[in-house]
Image (cartoon, rainbow, N blue to C red; front, top):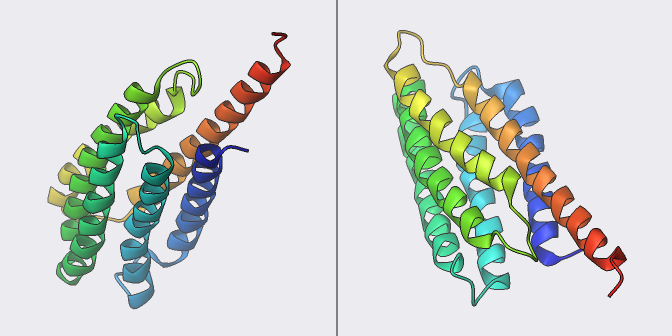
Length: 180
């Protein structure tokens, strides 16, 4: 298993586990739910750092480093905005989702090629992140903003990371099985 494949797989499984945990506590901004909100972008920080470290010569590396800093800022923003309520959290999460989704989409475009494939799961996940993030602004302006959509967002994002890991494994095995 390649390092990138392992990063995608673990990142995806952790996001899915986070969604399951957040489901149990997201109805209020308790200490546990806020801790989980802050932890989610920190998962992205770790994954992005590992990814950038493994891909030093890549044109995607700069975006990974950018995404690391962005996710660290998102963690702080989510912790700070939690005291203002669900609407503020949705706005902070939305900004992060839009910008990091655009970065993820761009990284996937730059990584398309013979070794890493077409990166369809990451392209789709990046685009959906931008769309989802934009919808959070609308939800934040509503009468009863809810953190429910974050569960779906993180579970879907995790699923796309797992799918990308599977696609990399399939591609690697297929290349290995092709006679030279």
